[in-house]
Image (cartoon, rainbow, N blue to C red):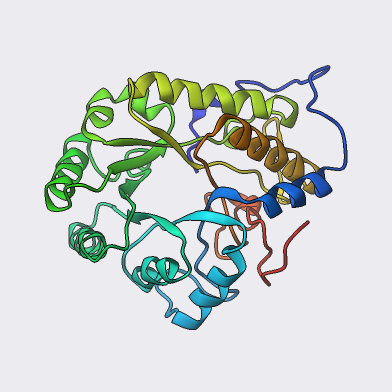
Length: 294
């Protein structure tokens, strides 16, 4: 999610600055049909939530939907059924950025790390992500996270290892940046209260800040997107028009500049409410019933 109070309203009013006009739905569909670099994999069907039993059948069905459009998928966990995704993705010829979900629960963290290492050793992981926004959530200290990253790097030499967090964390935490092989940055103009008319420019600025912090290391945008409904957050408005504009501009830039980007997300998931408010359930390119939105 990657929102922070002091970042809010960085860019709000947007009179006079507009992206190119046109039928954004047609543009979005054309870009998707041409193929996008990557997409974040949404695991849970309607009525499911983390901790519920998932099946190989549902994973296969969703991978079959995504296969024509995305070269890579990103996963967030290596337990509770998520460990089935990378091997199945490889069957479909899809590359994988596989994440171990870390929190303040050390027992669960050990299971996640073991799962990530085992999947990598079996050849199912192209890039390994040790943790996702765990510093943002303040569930681990920087020292603890570095220990996890270092431990994984020792166990899977030859596979790039990184950590996923908001773009600004890599500027503010140089020790984390130094220990990562690759910089995995989340860039969300929506969660910084940015008006849609400035959002594309702002997202590029976020990316460039991560590039500067990386000091020559590869930077991958691991999450960016815009919700299709659910209301407003400061200057950001969640609606279908803005959703289409953001997707189109982001994907065109990614294609033109050869930026490696994982779009968030593949499918709407109704359980994603709470801290993310009403918009949490509406970030997917496909809705909760697996129908493409445009």
